[in-house]
Image (tube, rainbow, N blue to C red; front, top):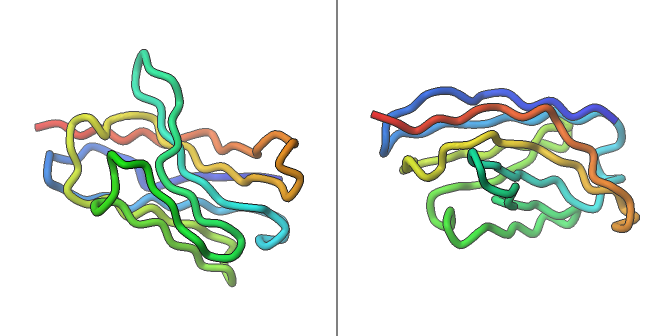
Length: 117
């Protein structure tokens, strides 16, 4: 399984970015598709999750600002990020969680998001 993110970059506070994630394999074979992030010196944290059934959950810190969506036909997941704040800066990873939740997730290489004036 290959997971590839794109769409990161430098943006000013209050701006927007849209991250994309492409995954190989049967899209609906995964329990969920997820976005995580890791700020410098911090642990990786979950940002947004879309389950196989389409249920979406968000970290409290991004609720109302970030939106996760998917395109099943293209095997892609997106993260629309609006009203970005400096504390949103970090390396953003896309992950595919196998149906066997005991198994490790498949991770992408990450895409850098920097929010700064």
